[in-house]
Length: 323
Image (cartoon, rainbow, N blue to C red; front, side, top):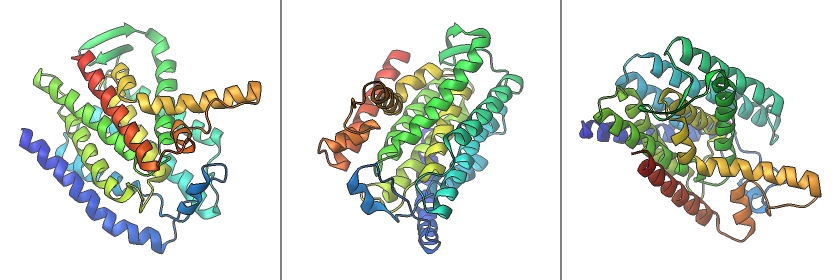
């Protein structure tokens, strides 16, 4: 069985690399280039025109691998809905940016409306189709708290916040893809151990393993200096996949530990905006947090590697706590 997962991982890497070879020239030919925000780090302005919407490079292999290796179960379809619904929202956002040559696509309200609608549908599906209860879990076999009706608004806010936190993390070459690779490896270990305990989590194991491989393959194109950006198409798809694992895999609380770097990125933005409105001063040199370290003079690669390391530490720590 271990060799089976090695095969899935290798196939994911190969499919992603191969698709990248096909999609990159197409993105360049169609002039689907990134528009850089003027209020961001000035050295990022040189990245303007780099092909974006590269999320399709790992979205399509994931669909192929899910079709080949996963069993048709409610949990699979719910996870795919979460993954693809947010990929679609991100794609709409990217298309508007590319068509109108601006750094903003959908408005904040349009994004939130789409995201909360998707999450509400996901929660309804999980309840009525997959029999999801209102208990918050550390792992599927470790219940922590039955939140009752509070579960639904809490989960809606948490999952939308988590997905947008993943989106905010995608601000440096290789940052979001590298962090997500480690997070998906963490999920794979969790589901592998749970499977050894007799729980039915084979689909989740396959999906986590495949997504780790896709992130690994995508990093070849996205690592500094990036040949392609994943765009909101990719970053929101990553967020949707992680939210899907948290909900379908019944490990919401473990996801907080795995995704702490994502959440710190989001919190840094909220603190910066709130403190600035109250005092007219800034806590960080620039938000999200990765830009703060850039403004301190850290090379882009160093910031990414440090965030990767922080994620690895948190994933290992969370696994030790859980098991």
